Structures are given as structure tokens and as C-alpha cells.
Image 1 (cartoon, helix red, strand yellow):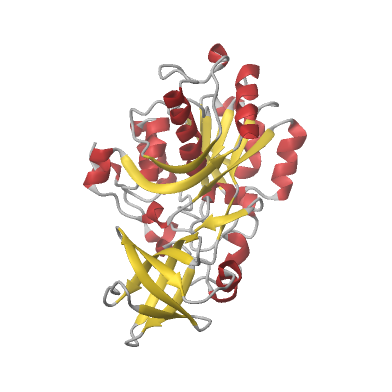
Image 2 (cartoon, rainbow, N blue to C red):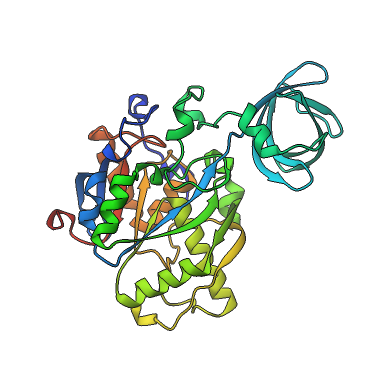
Length: 366
């Protein structure tokens, strides 16, 4: 596997730098996993592709205003991208500065708050705020929504709402689970009225999702760590869905990563056999709740044990997310779909259009 195999040419004009006025107005490219057949559709048509009893699983993480500016004691400008808030007023953060700060140095952040650099975690820094304060309230007051770098613009007032899903609940992400951005209350009500079920998990998306892949990551089979929480109630929903013979549809690659981490953990614990998919035929198998970190790196050859279908946005060339999609849909199918999307001028990346990857005949479903 070579990262360059996942390159494709994207005209800059196809990068969606702003969202459409209506969340569910985006286009939807439907990809049949087995045949590779492509059908052009729209997000509002998603209910037509699902059956009563199917389960949509969403990521309910909430993007935090994680970009904060400041200056070093020497006066040099500093930009923080907070990856995680820890106990005892400590932060794990990326720091952008002309010169890397030293351990023990101080930084004056917006809101007249001092922080001291107390450690390193690879490319990340650990900071300790100098006084007791409610860090969440401070971030809300002085921080900015950390838009992805490929948008090429600063965050605007509208991004505070639009770069957030309508079901966002638990703060902790520095990037939105973008497939979920397409679902508005009207579309959710239509799905529920049809009998489609909704389930929720939490994966706090980290800045590592935008980082270029390194060769050592591919060799190790591990990716940047992200925190996930999958409840017993969602595990019960999934197992009941499988027993009925319905499908589990993951909304977003973050949801895929969380669900397949739970499956892998259940295999290690012995509640799920390593050689089977969690299907009605394996109805006595059990997946168990999980709370903790995941470093799972899903690449072609991966065995998917939970998800039957996926809704996802279009991802950066040579990215881990494009590899994940290829692992599920097949490399040739995926790259052909992206070529089609470029030719048909779909909108790409976080505020762009979506794909639905499944196995039924799309042209016969609507």
C-alpha cells in the first residue's frame, strides 16, 4: 500500500468553502459496493434508500472553540489549537509559533490568562493554566471555531452554527463529523416517520484527522488517538437491528472508526468471534460498550464486523479517511467514484456533498 495510490486531482473550485443555505440540499453520490454502479442523487432522498428498522448511527460530539491566540513572554505571536482539556486546568494543544516554546516558558493567552508549558506529547504540548477558571467558559468567550485549513478562510459568525451538527451534545472535538452536517430536523423527522431508527455514539475528532500520513503510521497500523464512548444502549440497538435482518448505517468515518473499534475490542474480550461478521447468522455474538482511546487504522483488507453501509463526505487526497472508504467500498470503486464526482462537479470536503455506500440497486430504490 502506497499513499500515492490515493491521490486524485481536484480543481480548487470544487472545494466547498461555505455550506449551502439548507443542510439537506447537498448532492448524494450513491455507490453500489459490489458492482461499482454509481447513481447521482440528493441527500433529501436518503429515506428512499433505507428500510423501516434500519439503524442510522450518528456521532454526537460537539466542536469546541479550540483556536486561541496569544503571545510568548518575548512578545512573539502564538496560535493554539486545543486538542483536549484535562483535569487540573491543563490543556493538550498544538502550538504554532515562529519558534517552538520551551518547557517551563509562559504564554499570555486571550482574556489575559497565563499558561505555562509543562510537557510535550509528540507534536503536542501540555499547558497548565495559571489560575483556577472554568476553561469551557473561557474558551467560549475567547476561542474560535477551528475551521479546516483547506477552507482557506477565517471562521465567521455563521460557522459557529453550521460547522456543528444539529444533534451535537458532548463538547470535545476540534473538527466536525462532517457527514452528520447534512441532517436537519426535517430530514430526521422524515427518517423517523418511515421507521428508521437513530443511535448515537461519541468520538471527539482530533486535529490529526487533517495531518498528512507518515510511512511509520502505515507500517505500524496505528493512527492518531481519539476518545470514543459507545454505550450499552447503542450496542443493544445494533444487536437488535442485526437480529431483525436490518442494516446498520454509519454516518461518517468517525462513526465507522468508533463502531469497528468496539467490534475489535469485543473480539479481544471473546464476546465476538474474529472470523465472523455480526450478522443475523451470528445473532448470539455480542458487542460490548467501550469508553477510551482508539488508534485503529482502517485500510484495505480490514474486516468490517458491524457496519453494513456508510454515509460519508468526500475526503482529502492521500488521507487516512480516503483509505477507510476504500477499505469498505473497494479501492477501484472508490477511486472511480471520486473521478466521477470531480467530472460532475460535486462539492468536496467538510461543507461539501456526500456519498452513500451500500449494496442495493440504487436505480431501483427511488
